[in-house]
Length: 242
Image (cartoon, rainbow, N blue to C red; front, side, top):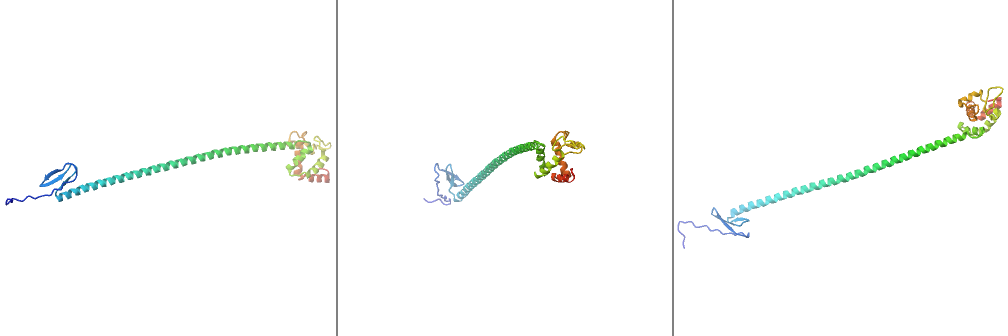
């Protein structure tokens, strides 16, 4: 059958059905048939199809970009969280170390204080013991006969035991070591024959009866006047008195 003259021939289109599954729908838009289903619509016009694909591709890229940005943001959040947790853990560790260090210092300070208290106590006890021993030794100096007391006191003047022989001879001549020796021709008195006897009062009010008081005065007199008992004895030998 021939076509009518003057009437335009109809343009034929090849339909490209989309293998999308489901119901295929055809829509005629401006003389163009578009086939599609509920998920997508693909046009049979190549130009329109390319445009639609470009739009869809742009959407996919944008979605992928948004996804990448979200992933990047999430990664940044995770990294920041890790850094914060690390900082917290580091601070806790340093706080614990500081606390231990302070505790150790406090313990050392307490131990040092206790040690110092103990040392001070020992020093005080040693000092008391030394003082007690000194007092006991000092008391022992004044025990015994007048000769023993004089011998005990000689080291206080720096004299060794050799000087005692001279002292013994000197005071034997003067008073025979008698505490109440009284010279009938003068006011000399006591073991060292102090002249007058009251000179010895500066060493004690008991100068008349206490041999220790008399001996202390006598030894100081010999040191100040002659330097040693042997020098005093030599003078007595020379002139008859000292």
